Image (cartoon, rainbow, N blue to C red; front, side):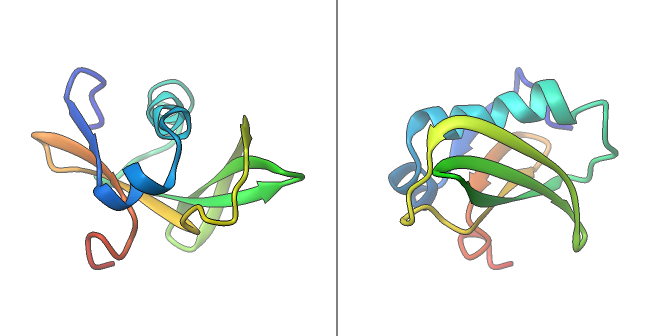
Amino acid sequence: MFNRSGARFASYTVATSLPDEAIDNVWFLIDNDIQGVFPLTNLIKFDLINNNGKLSYDFIQGNNLVATFDSPFPYEDSYPRSIVVYDSGDQQLIATPSDINL
């Protein structure tokens, strides 16, 4: 699950609302900070948080905040409030919850 060599994509909504660096950072977090540290299902959720003008990612499992990851990227109010990352086994997708009807 969430194999870094698998096909990875972002939905149109995510690709047009987040900068490329912020999208790439999601894959970095999964590969380097989450995978192997936390038990994962095939669906991961992040809330995007304004942390003193910088973007932070709140990693959510169930209804619980598990970890917060800060980034150097500026936060914009136009960012989606939440994103999900789905692994179908063949490909991985970053999307908003409404993109995949959650």
